[in-house]
Length: 572
Ligand code: DGT
Ligand code: CA
Ligand code: CA
Ligand code: ZN
Image (cartoon, rainbow, N blue to C red; front, side, top):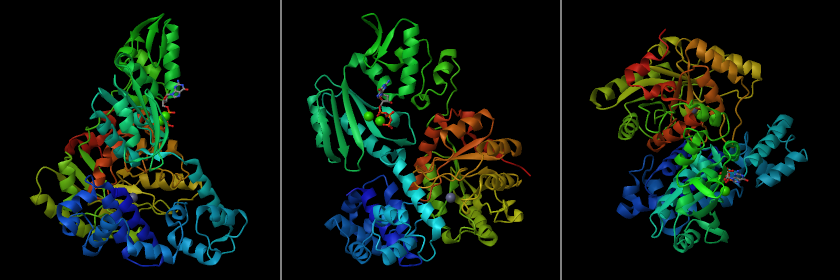
């Protein structure tokens, strides 16, 4: 059983317990789910190494949970979970995925209307049965229908972060097969789009039988759509389609370029080829019958008179024109980050201690991190008030004294109240090294009011960084209605930094807003928003998003050494 499958069980348990109005247990199960999901090593291997005792090395896993993991690994099932499901036989995950529907609503919907799944809920909402329920009403009924519609639109696409580890693993296994000379993933995965429809692999092999046979027999495969010697298509158990094409070496670059796309970028390239009297397709770049380029992408771009276009830019958003003029930006590189400015710990809703987070950040090569636990407005996370913040600052001072090779900055993720004030007093904010501000409530304000609220908060002289500026959660929650041009303008005026939150279902700012911010000369940071040690590596998704937004290294201030970074913040 994969880590993500075990995590899913615990996440559902958390939802069931929340439905029963348990107070602390849901949080504990959710934390474990987080930790399991992001572990790099398979839980089954940890178990094989040292049994239930070894499992307790996983953050948040105590004796009782270790026993449950053991039961799942040994029997493939968990009695406790089965009993919860029997008691309330509802599709808890599907239902709570709808915006505005939490476990407690699910309980009411089940008890009053016998609703067990999304289809039934939609039916009930359409026929006006929801508005009559206690605490629901007409507004909620509309919201549910909107939420279901929103989920349907995202249908069939996968957030990049939820599938990239699996894709990378398959890529590695294919590469290791005999008779395989090269394997690369193309398509939207290579362009690092925030969600992907399917994964497209390309391989070079003069004897493709072996790789095709292996490809259809992988343990993840659920269904084979079709198998041939040049193209095979399968569906994996997670419902994602994966294609594999085998191409000859001399046209690998042309095929890679073609199947990386995007379609619109390809069209623009072909137009340039035509202007030069050439023909470009997935086999190569041709003058008449003669192939003049095709083995590498670089030689194709060169023959077209273009500088090489990084895959993340290939969306036909002006990159071809820029490549022709030699004006492509020098993008930020993977590995350029020196710090991470949004990290939550067990002081609030994170799974790990400050020391553990710092240790992992250091291991990943970072030079500084800011601890930014939630503040009191987010009561369910145990958010800090001024007193708790002071205690945490003292704790950080102590840890910094004994810590080598990484510096911990004192910070907070401060809530922006409905009226644009902050939920921590200025006297306390003044003492912090880094103040992040964020909207965590009243998501449905009208555009004008929301924009005024956020820009007012940005004008606070202590507010250094606006965290996850639009509040969207991919496929789960729409961004709140806010005028991003006004936010960008205010960021420039006030020196407030805008965050690219790298957490895979946030990626907030998104690419088009990053590009606008860069053009406006606004400073950016890329943060992991880690809630567990295993989340810090999400930074790479933020770098991908920054590259898609044409951001250069100099636009992203946490690429700088600590002193330079601090100089970029507000200094009231
Ligand atoms: P996805 O899978 O929806 O996230 O997006 P892509 O970009 O991976 O699209 P996909 O898988 O349909 O095709 C992979 C690439 O193959 C695409 O980016 C460009 C290329 N391609 C596919 N169909 C066409 C086509 O009809 N014309 C051109 N020029 N290129 C195509
Ligand atoms: Ca694709
Ligand atoms: Ca495809
Ligand atoms: Zn947050």
